[in-house]
Amino acid sequence: MPRFQLSPLNRRRFARFRANRRGWWSLHVFMVLFVLSLGAEFIANDKPLLLSHQDELYFPVFKRYAETEFGGEFPIEADYRSPYVRELIEDAGGWMLWPPIPYHYDTINYDLQVPAPAPPSADNWLGTDDQARDVMSRVIYGFRISVLFALTLTILSSIIGVIAGAVQGFYGGRIDLFGQRFIEVWSGLPVLYLLIILASFVQPNFWWLLGIMLLFSWMALVDVVRAEFLRGRNLEYVRAARALGAGNGTIMFRHILPNAMVATLTFFPFILTGGVITLTSLDFLGFGLPPGSPSLGELIAQGKANLQAPWLGLTAFVVLSVMLSLLVFIGEALRDAFDPRK
Image (cartoon, rainbow, N blue to C red; front, side, top):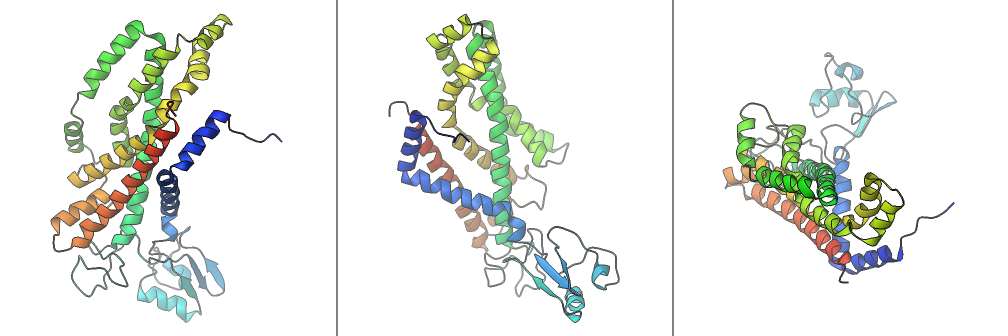
């Protein structure tokens, strides 16, 4: 079976990226944090990972079980933190294996010794917010939502931006002229005011925000791709492909686009950073995810409203700073690796 091998040019790029120790280790740290956040349900949850009752095993993380499954009276989902349900399981000789953080992002801790927001303790490692919800759990889930939102927005907006820039740069003429004028007008629209107006009519959610931001974020790569296509459409290999009868689509996406993507790849981490900042800002202003959703922006807003609880603002600030710093370091390493001057 043939093995995949990088070209000599790409091997040199990879070597340059790896030589940038700050970017190389930032990529490793970011990927570890992101992978861990994808399994947030196994790290922070108010349901046991594994439960034994009457010699049978249950997996509450994957499936909902009614209270009657364990000898209870009500056919509703079992509350495993309830002393009543715990007693039912223990009386039957059962046991429960809990995740490291026994709180979901929306679990309210009714056993606090002080009024919420409570300071960090052995029970709540980073304290609680003003609604007695565990901050550590909300940070883990909020990190996942922020990265997934920014990653999805980056991928979709990059696809639209690359196609728009390729069409403008390849065909030029009136298509390029009208395309540039449209982008100038469209980019001048006040995005924040539009979001505020729309938020008064509908309740924003993940996909609603993604669709609205996608209408404006696709313009980030258009100029870069357009410039590469304007330069590459008159090169010798493009003329040779056209002389051999290759169609416009083949020339655009098989011959010119791979070379144009070299310049655009370096922008991806910075676009990802912009997506994280956008979602955090909207949540801070109250025009982002629905109330109760785990969000770094909402945590910053709580820190602003509860100055007597500095752990709220500091936690969100540190997590956001680390996340954005890692992405910036990765972007700088990619930029150096793909720099044609090197």
